Image 1: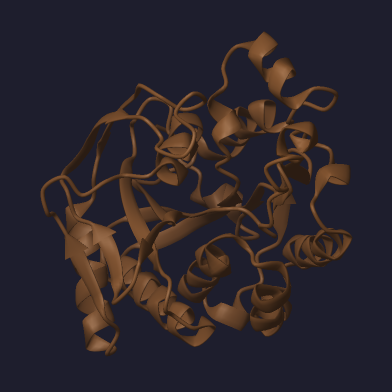
Image 2: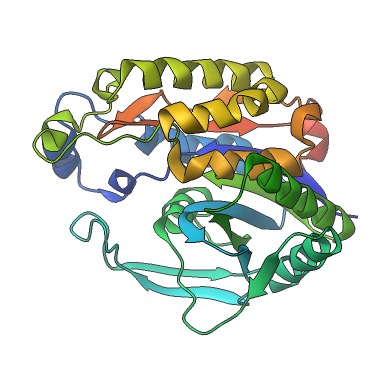
Length: 298
């Protein structure tokens, strides 16, 4: 019997891959992101000693249209350059074991439930930077399998929860111990072309909208309290007013896998709530109350 041993809601912003300190200062100016320290600390303090096999990662840059898609390649390897920001994110070599077996298990469970989903091993299926940036930090030795999963841009909150439930059931039926990762931001409105470079700091003062910032802060407080039912109750409104990244499907699918409004794990924040050229970004680690019992010696 498989199990979800932890869950992560995390930023994947391209600036994570600016490795030179001087270049970081040149880009972000007066307020440099805390995520350079927060992500390694999360891996070191919460994940490195945790007994699990696979990161199942919901990738907000992998937009599909007709169905949910899971990467069913046995290996995810290549060299990545971002078409969006090639100067910031380029020539990133990666090589991870995939989890084709779990991908097919989720596909089967989804179809049993009448949900359109496919486990794809088609040649040259791309891997996007919300998967790669996060795995760079959270899977530094490439010791864990990586299953990258799309968000479906035509899906409702109800659809996302149903697909998430299929993921949760497929994990339970498997022999896998899994960490689910929702890779994406919060409110997602960029500054316009003429202002964007002047508002590139990590300071929350550079969130593009005060209303967006306040809504993000409300969502984060619910994360901390483990009030996932409250987050789901606001999800349609949050989508409508704050245009969250990936339509917030990364979180909603994860929440569906964890039991939807019955899920009550509290979120532990790593790093600060930050702006990224207008958008809201944060990192939260969710653990069961008995996390110590699921840690294991390597």
